[in-house]
Length: 61
Image (cartoon, rainbow, N blue to C red; front, side, top):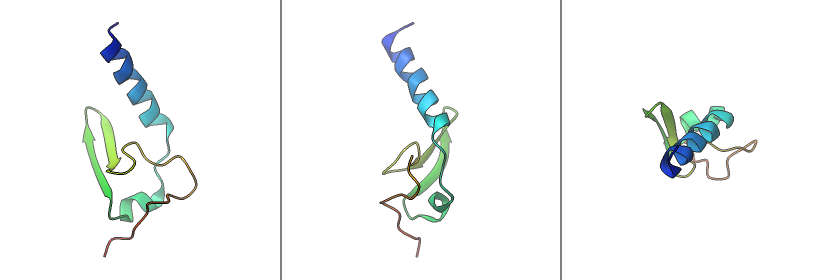
């Protein structure tokens, strides 16, 4: 297995272990498109935020 393939596998693993917060979908930074089977959550936290509340959350206007 190549180094790039290992990095991609680790990226997918991380993406599926972080829970996407409900506020993500109403945040102005939310992107929500899926690329290569992985959702790009936002520009600030591509795989979602792992805490209880995102410090970068900004409501859409």
